[in-house]
Image 1: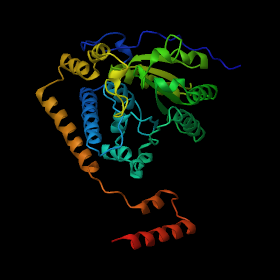
Image 2 (image 1 turned 135 degrees about the horizontal axis):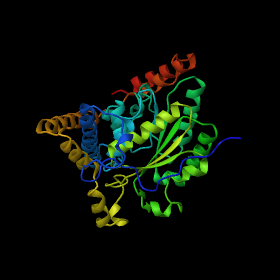
Image 3 (image 1 turned 180 degrees about the horizontal axis):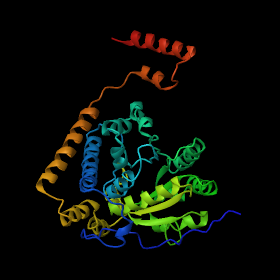
Image 4 (image 1 turned 45 degrees about the vertical axis):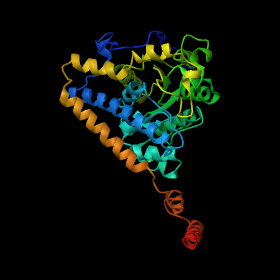
Length: 362
């Protein structure tokens, strides 16, 4: 008989840094992190926010079709991504800019996605990152399948399905949770609970104590973590990854955070949430919080501030150069990403298209 006894889920989110930057809670759960890596965590978060703003600027200037902001969720994303190995597979939804940045995916490639170019997906697989998933929750099943495949291949990698609170109202996610639990798949379900599924509040999406409590019904551990505390997120994901590598199965992590911006650039959040609510969450902004923590550790200086600003500005410049008025790629590139060794028929079709393009040239 399968043992489905799991730990009780604590309703209070796990924290190690308070809103004022002071250490609190169980510091023993925080893996040792060298000082330069602590500074790097801040740099990742600040750079993500700067790029987020630049993406919105580009969309407003007509350079992108759409963009979903991750402002306010930087700690949840950077904390998770930096807790993983480079060979752990990521299955993002569409708001994981910080995750992709940590994994080494150039923001220009992300920009190509939102510009509508098929080149947006180039380079993801080499960095163990699946394509962004616009359908809500469908990629959770893909993550479980990849986790099971890794185990069959004798690998000790884990997969992470990045999902939002709204996706927990979708059947695909519940199928994935049950399948992962039954087969002990080395998968982490990382829910960024940003309080709103477009205009639907999280309070209208379930009747249990929390999203993390859903894990009990599937026979896996569930953890609530302060999604605005980068060290807490990193610690919880490190524990879940270690557990998965040891063959103990999946974990459901609920990172409690807030989407400070609009759902996408097509959304007007003032129609469904109050300015007071946003202000309350802005006071819990993860970036100033971690800066205060670094100051208390004696790791903050004008030099660090300048270094972070320079890095962020440089990447924003690279993003703009890659996206602004970018030429449409050649349709012939479509044939380069089908088979590693093209078939005779595919070569024939490519030649036909090349001839047609040449004929249409002015």
